[in-house]
Length: 301
Image (cartoon, rainbow, N blue to C red):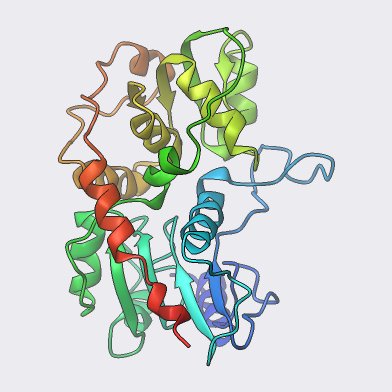
C-alpha cells in the first residue's frame, strides 16, 4: 500500500462515524439507526460533475428503498428515536470498506483485500459486527477468516424488489437485448454502441429501470445489480467483465448464493452476446431468509 492510500485509510478509521462511504463529513445521527450507503457521487466518465444530471448509483440506492419498505411493514422509520446511535449496512460491498461497529444485513465483500493494513482493522478484535445475512458464501468465508460470526443466510436485498414493485408499467415496445453497463463505463459504451438499448443505473428512478428490464428478452450487464434485477424479474442475463477481474469476487459471490457459477466470463459485449445465459434461479428461499433475518430489534425501545 502506498503512502497516499495509507493516509486515506487512516482517515477512514479516524472518521469512522460517517454514514456515506468516502464522505466523512456526513456524520451519523445520535439516537437513530443510521443506514449506510455508498458514494452516490460517482467518478469516471458518467458526467458525474454535471449537476443537471442525477448522480445516483441505483444498485446501492436499493438499500434505501428496501430498508424503508421493510420498516413500513412494521410501522417503523429511520427517523424513529432509539436509545443509542446504531449503524446498519445493507445493499452493496461495504462490509470491509468502513470501520464502524455495525449490523450487516445482506451486504458483501467486493474483493479479496491484499492490504494487511486494512485487514488488520477489519478483524473481529477491533471491529464488532452483528451479521444477520450476507450477499453470498464467499463473503461469509472471508468475514469468518477475519474472526466474525456469520450465519448461513444469503441474499442481496435487491432480490426483494419484486415484492416491492410489481405493478410494471411502460409501453408495448420490447427489446431483444438491453445492455446495463457499470456506471464508470456507461459513456464509453454509449459511444461505442450508439444503436443499442442501454439501461442506465445512474438514476434513482428504479421503476423505469425495472420496466425496461422486464421488456427485454436478454440482459447483458457488467453491473452486478443489473444481473440481480434480471434474475429477480425472471429475465435471462449474461454478466460480462466491464472492469478489472479483481472485483469478480462480488459477482461470483452473488452467483454462489444461487448455487450457480459461470463457466466462462465474457470480457466484451460481443462475447456476451455469444454466451448462453445461466438458468434462472429460484430466489424464493433467499427472499424468505432475508425477510426473517431483518434486524427489527435495532428499533426496540
